[in-house]
Length: 557
Ligand code: ATP
Ligand code: MG
Image (cartoon, rainbow, N blue to C red; front, top):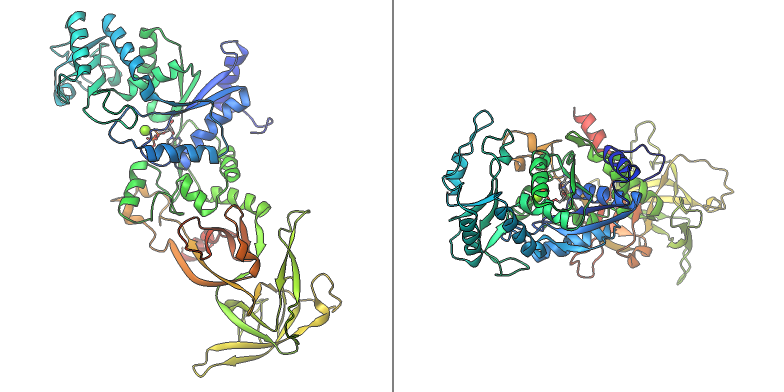
């Protein structure tokens, strides 16, 4: 975050808190529930929380909010850690809300002792039916006035496993007529005879979110607990528990969830895409997960830039995914190694080019023209080359600056060529172009005096490597699949993946590395796929060079 940028509303609050001396430094936390892989929405929260402690001094904890035993898995914990680290952030402590179970139990006992909690025998349905509505107050449970002694005994029996799931709950004793429905004696502990990924079978009662989150914040002395807007009504309860328990006063602040066009973001929906095999896993390159976008070739720098540019809002909104792609292009343009790859080859024979047996003419191309200290690579030339089939037209329209009969183009890093003759097979298909090259026109040492408008990428027909490329498009056909009628899955783009089984690449790509990013000239940005490719070269297209989508949309509308 640059210093000149104006502060967002949370930064303003923090700055005021530090100025007034309320805090000397700040503590934030990123609190994922380990029930799925992180997505770009989480990335926003990560950049925000870690960004704040970096900017204002202090630290950020990574806390797994693992109080619900049923949905949580260790696999998710590992992926979350990997994703946060990959985004470039270091947490101070790796913590688990489940490590606080004993302390949270103690807090509950303290509430009972102060007359602020009671054991209720009503079923979940009965409790709901007595809750009232926004216009009607609720009704007291018949168990609301149990003695403190009886509540203490029953609660310890709940813990000891004496009761079945749902037989009893512990509720806060607040006000059944409270205007905030969440304050009407909320449930704070329920019985669940379930195995927990960390605590095993040690517990059969588990705290509810509202009784775990704020208290965990308090235990860790979190100063600014930042969450999304749906928790606004919970804030009152958050404060109530902290006040009654007389523990460290953490405070909750809310910002709007990050939504992106052409994307769904809830873990529940992403899980459906995985389970119904619309994608090939959480890390499918079309998924808005951090692991998917990483596999697709997005960079941490691009994510952080995106979060910085968008900032945070107090109201729900939806950000154009094109902005994220813009940030990705901006970064890749700076770091990507340039390579030439022909997707749909058309053979070019240079009739005046003499090949010397056993010798190959090596040309030189810089890896990245954006970088003044760029390294270079060698590119073999030859009498027989491939160019892209659609870079040639027999009867071109005006302003077609590529190759046509009698026309001239430059081959990148090589020579100017002229098309003399078109060779066809019996079916009339063009099989070959017979061309001449201009020896004095070599790139970097061009004395030919010839000016051409078009420059084409190419590869040697006899000195290349083959690869597979996977071209990705947006996973959904509409801007906001979640708000359309019917099921969001009805709006899946059936053409979101196009596999080109064999493309022809310059030999330098034989040594492609996982960590490197590539720009295939005139084709887009690509990265090696990280999965079971069995020694084959498989590249994922990260993003096109320009926004082809917007153009398509305009054409079809
Ligand atoms: P989902 O609704 O996708 O399942 P969640 O809110 O249940 O997400 P958590 O694991 O509880 O996921 O989220 C961890 C943190 O990330 C929370 O602080 C949450 O507010 C934040 N977060 C989740 N989704 C978004 C989003 N779309 N934009 C911003 N922050 C988000
Ligand atoms: Mg959640």
